[in-house]
Amino acid sequence: MKNMKYKVLAADDEFWSRENIRNLIPWEEYSLEFLEPACDGEEVIERIAEEKPDIILTDINMPFLSGLELLQRLQNEYPEIITIAISGYDDFDKVKGVFVSGGLDYLLKPVGKEEMVKVLTKALGLLEERENTKKQDETSKLQKHKLSSFLEDSEYSALLSGKLYGQSASQTHVSSTNTFSEVATLMVKFYNITEIAEQFEHDNLQMSWNIKSRLRELTGLEENAIIFNNSNKMSEFLIVKTADAKEFRALAENILKEFPLEEYGPVSVVLHEQTSSLDDIGTVYRELISTLITRPFNRKHSILPVRKRKPESCQETAKRRWLGNQHLHIWRRSCTIC
Image (cartoon, rainbow, N blue to C red):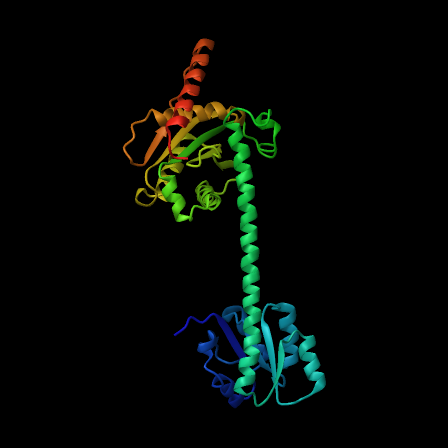
């Protein structure tokens, strides 16, 4: 049996009329599920919320709530439902009332098979058109979100080099609405990023969007958390947020569970638990990379904490920064995974 794509609910106060509609055509051959018919308009209203019909066939002359009254309520409360009126009377005023109330068509009893197929074909075409429009709108909306996310990634990634068009982070919209003066940083490194991209048919924007969305969920959807994909190194994702050491460690463990080794290959999570300002993200990033490239690599998941720095002299600071830059230069030249 075919999967039933749309639901049809018929309403008529006469038993034989309901049965005639039920047996008029093989509904399943048109991918339609014919619901148990209703006896009047009030029953239709009661059942809509639970059964969610897409098409309603209603008799005009019914007790309690007439067909025209039902059509008017459906137009006001459920305009997405396609309605078709059925009547034994060829009354111009009633026909006019049907179309004024949003009805798709008006059929005279006894309804023939060809008439029913014709009007249902029209209704199905309208439903398919709506569905396609909805999908296009959702796709367009997603593309806009992905593009916006990419542009945001580019801006945050520029901070990793220490400058953003000659500005510090505090001078940009990056931190204009949030306070990032005391934050810790976590970096997620995917070693099999090329293979992961194949899962998304090499749509890198979609892949990045997917991974960031999952990381966002793991952070508890916190507003004061920055999550971005390094535009210069697609395999690196950074999370900047306020968190204590225990919380950061738990987040790292959850990330490794979210991206299992068997499916995503080895992943390293590098923890920079020392708090700092977002303006220092360039220095923090170099320390993350330094920790990453000096660890033993065994193709397993790993959590790598950055060692806490001891107070140092100006000469030691200059030497550390020089070594960090050298490590970063070597890393970029030797790493073949983008």
